[in-house]
Length: 492
Image: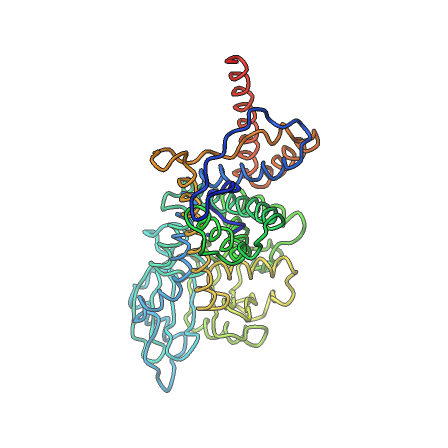
């Protein structure tokens, strides 16, 4: 799925207006201020905030709306799939071998198990996951088994390493790509990237206005004594500053899943040795096999060796002797004869439990281990950021906070468009309001122009859908302004 004074069309600084009325349109200056005049940067932020929000606002609305639904999806899944996820509590529990054999009888002997997730708590079911060539990429067939009776409670498609069930997987794909595949992912990257830019530009405008305002409290608490444009502006500014941290967080973490930006961020982390430690699953001298990226994506691969159901119990017992100490666990059989079993903690809520151990299935000896306590700070922050963005870090309070933040971004965007309409020349006009005056760069010193271009290029190298449009905006806006001045000079 970010904020400044907001992720929506920016407003003009309101001119003086009659008490209780809407501001009168401000006439354009006949002569642009000379180069080097003060205030060029604030005017540039205003124009950037306005145009970026106008153009990207629809994408932000879609991302925020789908993100609000995605935030609540973990809890919604518990309601929709209650029969599959839960079973009556019994005094005794069957072995994993018995549960796996029951699932095998249900699906047929020729199906390949890719993972087993034992029931984490009394009243929960065990999930046995199978590779299925009829499913899409990163999808598995999940069979839910009652751990007390071995009754099959359900059969659903699960997605990714998060094991998202159909509803959450559908919402996740809507939020990430509008169900349009890789092409659709450009929309979410555009929304996540520009939400941060619009938010930061809005923050700059908010600071500038607070410094010059007589009633500074109107920028942190909406003033309902105003009417019309000024009332919406007060709500827009005050709400935006309270959404600031949440909006920037969603923007930053959302970029990690983006098509271009996410790849560049991953490459940067690797270059700085900030990657997440991986578990070596190749027996003997081999290459480490990294785990999937949890959250919106990921996947599981089918194995190619015969699996003895009793080995699930034995391998889990070995892991529990080493570093597996939570009920939320996934056991993955070897991919081939040269691979180890993997026991991986999958507890994404606080406290984070993602320790993992590799076990030689022939000797039941541990061949490698990874402990979350040994992760570097960047790797831990990445893990926590992903889980908080996904709504699993702090449970329902986390989900409600994400939902309210997304709802706030939606409202901020709508208010921005309302202010744009309220700024129209007359109340009877069908035209929206005019954009802030151009010419900020003409008033800027040479180093200011160079700095703006340099920042745009630098951002473009990491976030192409931000940096290059930003450079294009500055260049095109400068050309249009130059042509307008030339036409005005010819007309005179």
